[in-house]
Amino acid sequence: MTTSREGRVATLWNLMFKEDRVSCAVYQGAHGMELRVESESGVILSEPFDIQPRALAKTRALRESLLRRGWSEINPKSQDPNPKSQ
Image 1 (cartoon, rainbow, N blue to C red):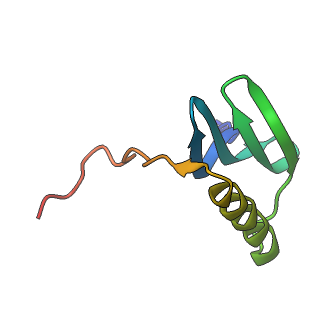
Image 2: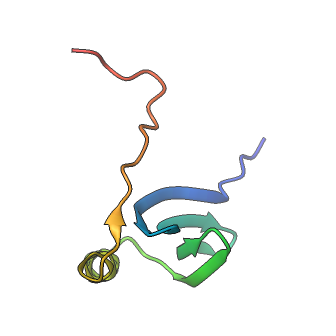
């Protein structure tokens, strides 16, 4: 039995400006990994992605640029179904 590995692998960041939201996410597809910058209305940017320092630096630079222009970070919800209590 084979398992499908397609779909969202990770969300790198989520930003908001007024009522507009964008996210940067990595997807696994039939042709390898893909980086997508998405809004609620669709995909803004899509390109092949390798987990390499240069690719991660590029996404960080985009995030920092948007933050300088007035976008704000959206606090991600925990994806851990059983958070540890201290």
